[in-house]
Each structure stands twice: as C-alpha cells, then as structure tokens.
Image (cartoon, rainbow, N blue to C red; front, side):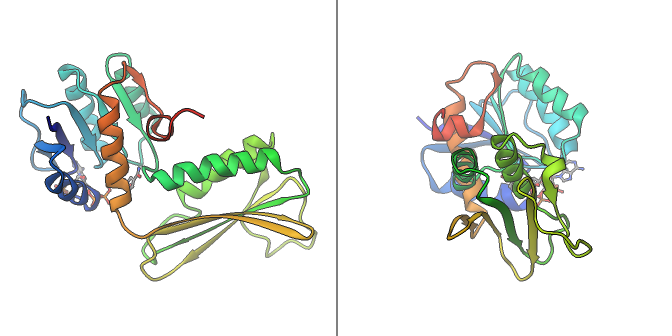
Length: 245
Ligand SMILES: NC(=O)c1ccc[n+]([C@@H]2O[C@H](COP(=O)([O-])OP(=O)(O)OC[C@H]3O[C@@H](n4cnc5c(N)ncnc54)[C@H](OP(=O)(O)O)[C@@H]3O)[C@@H](O)[C@H]2O)c1
C-alpha cells in the first residue's frame, strides 16, 4: 500500500521536487498540500507529514500534526528557539524528525569526520572548506558549522572558541586547537563540503558534493517511510536512515 503524504511547502523549490518524486513512485501518494495560500483539509486521510516550508507555515503544521497524531518530518530552517520548543513539545505526542540537512551523504560525512577527528591525533590540523552558488547569503554554511561542531566536540574543543574564519590580520602560526573555515561563492554550485585533516607528510580529505535538490527529497521520503514505525519522540535523521552508530 502507498504511504499517504501531506506535503507542506509544496509550492517551494524543495517541495516541488518532493512532489515530483512522490508522483513518480507508486510507494507514495500525495494526500494533501499546504503553502502560503492553502492548508491541508481538516481530516484528509494520511500517514505522515513532510514539511520544507517557512517557520510561519511550520508553526501551523505542528498543532495540526499533533491533533491528527501524524508523524512529522521537517527540514525547514530559520526555526527560532520558541518554535524549536514547540517541536520538542509536539514530540511528546508524535514522532518528529527535524534535520538541518536531509542528504544521506552529508549525514554520513558528519559521522566520518567525527570518527576521523577522534581517531587522528592533534598532529592532524583540521580545516573545513565549503563552496556554494553565488546567491547564498550566509557563510560559513550551516552544514560547515555542523561539521565543525562534530569535529570540535570529538577533539574536546569548544566550537566557537576553536573557530577561525579570517587569518588576514594575524601574524602567527596556526595553533593545534583551531579549526579553520573557508567559503567559496560562485556559479550555480548546489553545495560542496570538504573536511581536511592535514599532518606532516600526509593529508586526509573527506568531501561531499550535492548536485541537485533530489537528495533532500530522497532523504525526506526515506525518513517519512521509516518514521511511521517510530514511537513519539524526537527521531534523529541519521539514526533513522543510516542506522544507529
Ligand atoms: N534540511 C534540509 O536538508 C533542507 C534543504 C533545502 C532547504 N531546506 C529548507 O527548506 C525550506 C524550504 O526551502 P525552499 O528552497 O523550498 O524554499 P521556497 O522555495 O522559498 O519555498 C517556501 C515554501 O514555504 C511557503 N511559505 C513561504 N513563506 C511563507 C509564510 N510566511 N507563510 C506560509 N507559507 C510560507 C511557500 O509558499 P508560497 O509558494 O505560497 O509562498 C513555499 O511553499 C527552507 O527553510 C530551506 O532552508 C532544508
């Protein structure tokens, strides 16, 4: 039987791709849509909600999901602490999967980077390089920060204390306890992240490259498929789709 999905943010760039993947796969059925102008029917038949929208729409989706006892998979970013609290409160009643990046490859990259930072000694300096399209507003990317948090905590370092974003005014060698971030902007690059581990005589580079939004759609649909078997609570995306570490 098909998984019946309510799609929030259906008119958006990611939502449209999710809609296309649903249409093309008989395992899934589009049971309802929400965007700025429309909202799900009060009682449409459904198994799960996927939301890639805007915090204002997510704020309406959360109570709907709780009232209908539907699991919620959301990738909406820019969620403030109050809305994050609402997600956590909702998770007392329904399973909630909330992730900043729904790419399976990026989630595995975070795990591999954490493992490398833990395994390799401090003779390996860590630097993170990311490349994105020319329209991107923020730097470093949220994913670069997430990678930085993973490797910093694996080394027992504070994320903010170890981060170095600009060396232009410094006249001193690099310390063992710093993690450098570099951002390249240009063209239509969907997203590339490399974590460097640089030692005397050798260098390990862990790289992930995204080429289109299908990766988020596939990740969200993989999570939606599995979350229906979960109990109420916050469900970790990587644990759900890659298995527990
Ligand atoms: N976690 C991940 O892996 C991941 C990956 C990519 C993107 N994202 C996030 O997913 C979200 C959607 O991204 P996108 O690129 O698809 O954005 P988008 O193209 O701007 O689409 C946004 C969607 O939200 C709706 N919306 C926007 N403002 C609204 C408001 N004030 N009230 C109600 N609805 C509103 C839009 O409806 P209308 O069309 O009616 O305006 C549209 O359906 C963003 O938060 C983005 O950062 C997450």
